[in-house]
Image (cartoon, rainbow, N blue to C red; front, side, top):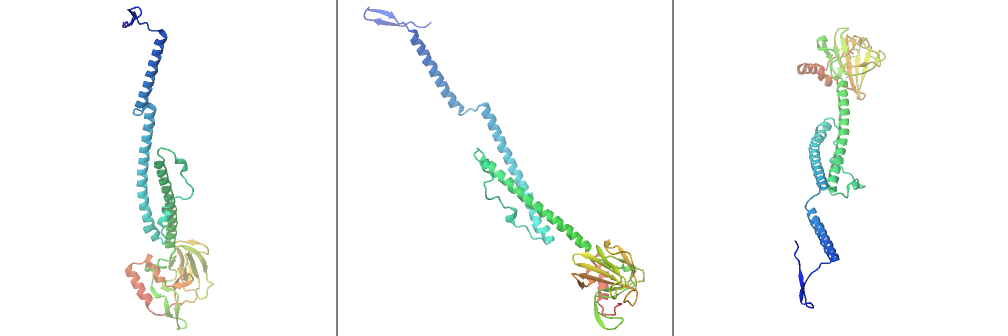
Length: 323
């Protein structure tokens, strides 16, 4: 029960009951509610600065997860760059060196992106710096990978060419050791068997019985298989590419024809004594860029060290050739 209040009336010399007017009561209630509302808003504003709403909490969780993902992405890029750096080092100092290719300059491998601001659309966000740096690192890493990929493609091509070169070089003896009677004459000045004049002998003479197999000394294409060259009789010429050509003279007969592809070790003909020849033997020459060179320097593919030394000793003797 609310307390009843009185006031003293001097005119009547008595206490009179205080009557509260209805309008005043409503005004009082309105002021109270307004003050309560303002106070509530003030409290809410203060509290909201320290307490997140469910939506804000969800956004913050999403942002934290995004930052975590970017951190993980940067760590993975660090690992990828370490692996790529190792490949680049081997590429420059092993692969390209082995195949006699120029190393790729560091500035070419790690060049950035100049000119127009490529990352303008990533500005204006709370984490713009993180996003821009990560995107830039990704772009540079992608470029490095492209450069390295092209380099490895080049190395693959060089390796294929090197393999073809090694297969093409005349690298074996054209007549097997067990089929030889003897190594009659080597490369250099020798006595001509017909004129007895000392002249330059452009190849090596392998003495063997008529019909002894003769083998291609490297991969190539038969460019001649005829007796149209003076002195050589029935002979074969194989173009090995890379400037190499081998010649097999005084044959008894052929086992190949012009334009036929052959591989090292293929049977191409048989020893004979056709043309300007004193006895059955194979006259063998190797040419590089149109010049005759000493064939003995190319027998690493078929002879042991002892056999090669013996062949070298016999080939060095200045005796009479057989053609």
